[in-house]
Length: 411
Image (cartoon, rainbow, N blue to C red; front, side):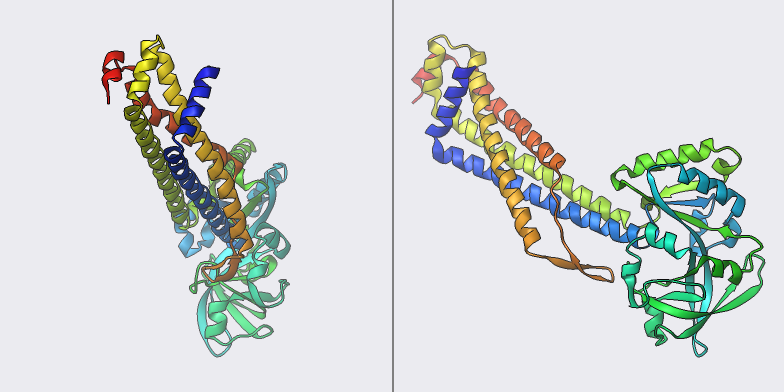
């Protein structure tokens, strides 16, 4: 085996120009894939983080049927306080759950005594909500970064359209589940920028204010938003929460449904497109490596036919000839993979040092932080190595099957 390796290395160095060209092509392919995966993956994670950490949370719990009617914000599909207490007890015993927030969601009319418009109201406990969606406070462009009793955070769309500033007084009018109309006066605590675009109409008030405004005999929660400690274990956390709730007994398992953010936001389609593009780029890498190494190895076979005939004539077994050519292809693939990973890591470092910024929805000045996952580097390296062997297989097989007399006559 040692002799085969020596011969393979010697042949690679002997045909330096051709070998360098092949290694360069493989290197370029690896660099492009490494950079693309790191940048696109970082952008996808940032996009998901903006959605989940600004408003949705990682996981949400609703009463069954609520999600199908979520656009109408149905108060008749809210969870009663007894059920919510059982759910809170279960969530408190799950280590994977970092925090959760109870929400009462309803539609209403927002008025500044001169104009009126519709608004979606989220009644929350501020300390729990800010912990569950930590980027929410970053969306407050004007006013206080807190929310107290009798205060409201209003969306930027309404604030600009009705010329409302922090400290102004406004009224929320809403219809409770019994059909009666109720109203309450609030002080504008701050202005919220939208995550997804200029159409955002979500405002926030205190949970207790929501209970009073809707004249609830006892608190009824429409939604429970959760934040888990390790986002990469989202699906496992979802399954664990479902199992724990099912084991809690009573009618909880039959009356609630658990969903991750993927079921709640259309931006999952963008994330899937990014994943599809990543697969396409990897396929291109495979094509580059396959064509490059196969071309070089075929040329090597035709140029070295007399050499192949000579070593075959002196008794070299076809298996060793096959191994010799496959080792050459393997080494060129490994060399290109190593160089590509080194240059790719350096390129990602340069990208991060360049302080590239972009806008997402209404969020401006977000900094791109490309991160290379060691797992991706390992996967790319393995793919390149395997494809290098596959690419060298056909030329190597051709060389091993040559008849010595015909090969020696080749000019």
